[in-house]
Image 1 (cartoon, helix red, strand yellow):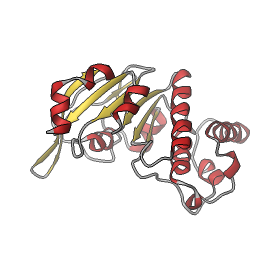
Image 2 (cartoon, rainbow, N blue to C red):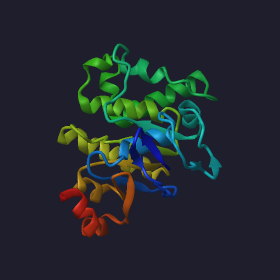
Image 3 (spheres, rainbow, N blue to C red):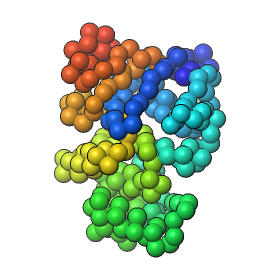
Image 4 (cartoon, one colour):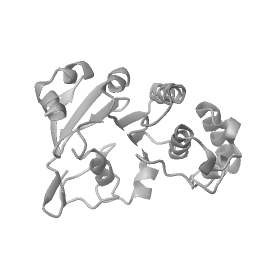
Length: 226
């Protein structure tokens, strides 16, 4: 994948694969291209080169909503929820295909119970804590039952109790077969959660492997510490 912003090469022939059932961490210094990569994969940003394949299908030019229906979910650095809607309304607003009204309500109920948001079901999203908004955004993405969840710093700014809940949720969803690509700065958290780590620096993949190997990689240490 290649992406330019004027004369700046933000992504330089970035290439990697993710296997079904993995939890993959995407790390790198600020400005290394992590969020740009997710935005390009999601087609929120126009790409300058490269192909994207999902479940063996070329999805390079699919619009974001069509990619979501193919099974790719996404959460953002700053939670994108409908602030003037309640938690329940946020989830019901997702246009789920192929489900009866009863089945949709059952999915909403399951997600609210799983995320612990049932207690704030009628609360307006603007009144939620930062961690609760992240859970709501994740729940909304899960309404479409995606195979792959791409998450941009889902644990940033979350208090310890909410952090544990989010981590447990990701791990439990992973046990049901869901795959994750997670941007995260906290190396200890990456080590705890991820099976594999991909490291970006200046728009290029500079390392890839198990968390314990990445921790001691000289090129990764240099990228972070200069």
